[in-house]
Figure 1: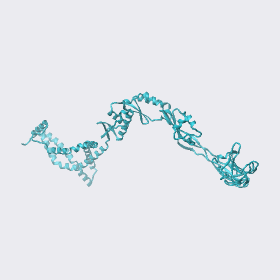
Figure 2: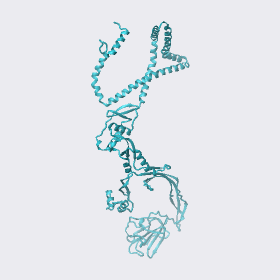
Figure 3: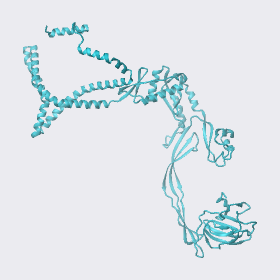
Figure 4: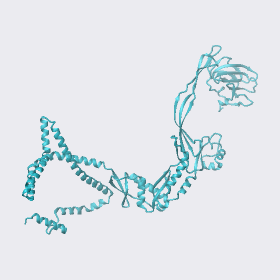
Length: 607
């Protein structure tokens, strides 16, 4: 029996009411295939569900599918608008075309727009035809309109295919490009799930790891009854959610893990949680009051801070860790045992250093076990001592950057002048000090006005110093030339270092013991000013080295120079003997600087 639309509609209504097909209609072929596939693939699907990667992949594919469908819908409208605007633009360009190019463009435009133009015209004709046929009745008019529409589709359908050959590839490419661009622009984040519920979103897993460490620190501070606490998160990809930082994520984890928490202020000292209070504003005000007396808003070069890094963090903390704010303030204003480092200076002894720090020598030794104060080398100059003493728990540190000017001393250059008499000098160029601008950084602790640390940050020379140039005469009265001494003396009796007596209040020089006839050498270059005999010195020589230096050699057996003779450092000037007031062979040696007798030991400390 042939079905009419009325009977088919009744059948559909019956199926909807009963929820099953009409009698005689079993499951379709495709339904049976679907069930068979699910039966075979069921175990594999269940196994895949147990892996977190499957959830991440499924979520990603779901996002791609959802946004792909959404993008396709938007692109349909976008493509249609582009086609319409392109058609308008092409029509405008058509007026600019000419020759074969114009004809080809015209043909392409006609192929592309013909279906849409005919469609628009057909719609107008259908409306007009329906209006005309309404006189014969509404049903008749509708029937004629449908017949007219069917004839139009049949007649112009090939044109639609020709247009589709142009439009569909372009539209497909546009949809693909737009979809890829849109998906890449999405802000993908990680949804963190703990104990079966999402606690927040993070940009990377490292943020959660840092938050986990922060939670562990709060738990360790809270006590040992939570030592077994662990948290194992799972992650899912999410799009465009607001992400949390480490502190926010730590609070979210605590909120999902325990109900014994509340909002409070954590006090961190050098990164370690040391206290929790509900009166963070009171604590902050107290910290500000400790800093305020040292601040100077008008001095941008002054930085005031605590010696320790203090951080107040508002977040969730365990209720049983909260303490009164007065307890924290008392700790901050109290003292702790700290280490002071002292560098041993020349003249220091264990007793003087221990006394200056108010401790005993035994305590000082116990705090520095690497040094043995009882040995000769156990208290070396420049060595560092560690001294433990009570120090403020929280000390104010002031760092001041300042600039000052300092003079730069000038150098003196000496030039020998052969036309200038020996022993005389002449200034060729006056010296002048330079000027430098120095930037320094000084660190002060507490109320001290003396800097504990000073560091030179920069040094700029504003004015260079001018070298002083002095000419020194070399010309002797007899026409010979003498050289001014270098100021670096040599031992006058090489090979013999035993000195029976050094200079003292009752002895004028150094007595260098050596065998009779041993050569005596000039300690430096210069001119012989004295060469003769003295009742006390016996045979003796005096050499003027210039620069205010003179040397004397006495008790010689005989002399090898004469007055006015120029000598060089290392020349033989006499021979060891025991003339004058002497009891044995030796060389009596004296040094004068600017007329003042000086001990030779200043130049020869190891003899």
